[in-house]
Length: 114
Image 1 (cartoon, helix red, strand yellow):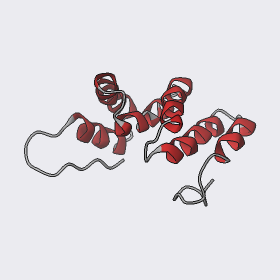
Image 2 (cartoon, rainbow, N blue to C red):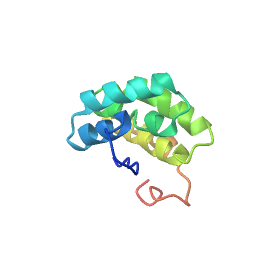
Image 3 (cartoon, helix red, strand yellow):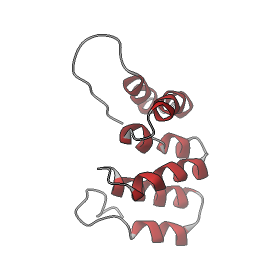
């Protein structure tokens, strides 16, 4: 996870969450991202990193947010589809995973992995 904001001062909640995520402390990252998402549900970065929920065994909750992101116009649209597919793989639901992998656009970086 990479969230970089230029400038000096106290790190933002997104920057702190990124640090926790990169340390694989998904529960702490999720707490900060939940605050950001609750304050601004249209924040695509906070919404996309609901993948912390998936990492923290809250797949269904994470998928709800990612599906909303997929249905919108975010730059994370196809990344959200890919992460939803991975959440189904994690839960050993290959048919659902295949359905979501088909939603990954060929013009994205995850397409070859999909």
